[in-house]
Length: 237
Image 1 (cartoon, rainbow, N blue to C red):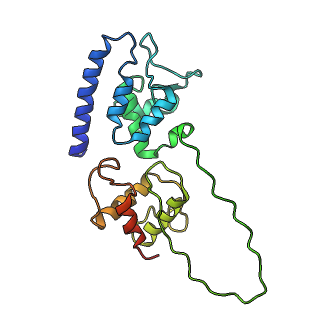
Image 2: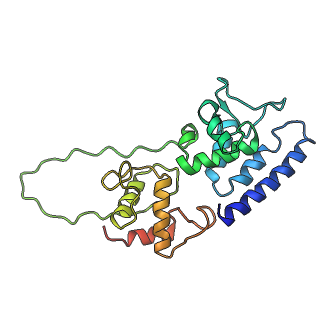
């Protein structure tokens, strides 16, 4: 574990101790949940939005028991599927029925799968415009220059966007492969920004001396912002 992660975890545990003490003075066990989520995911704002969407920052019932959905399948503030994830979470030392365990396992899911586990709480993507069928002409063809690959949007993990396919193509063509095979590999680029895309982008940012430490939120490490966008658009394609 890196020094930054250790420091962040220490501050998180200190916050949780303070929060639990404060909760005894409150009438509801959920009084500290929103603050805990916002503190723990201050570097990943989309996870704060997901927690609000999933449960409106609810981890417990009024009697202090763990909060489940109506089917008694999903538990806690991030509505983690208990039958699928409880064993894995327990092996990592996380009790997803508690606020700290639910948050820590949610971060693990985000780091491995992006925002995919919470698709129902993600903004709907606007579908690309329908292309007009090509009309075959009998006149001689006039050669035109090939359209270059250009990034115009700011991009980050968890997003689905046609620009991410361009990002993956640029990285794959210039020595920063997303993966050797499967989705994201050369010739099989996708529109989804997952953890493999972020790792390839981080290697590119380090190699180009743009940024090599921190996170998407505080330094832009692993996110396509203005500087990274300019460097990507300068690549041959």
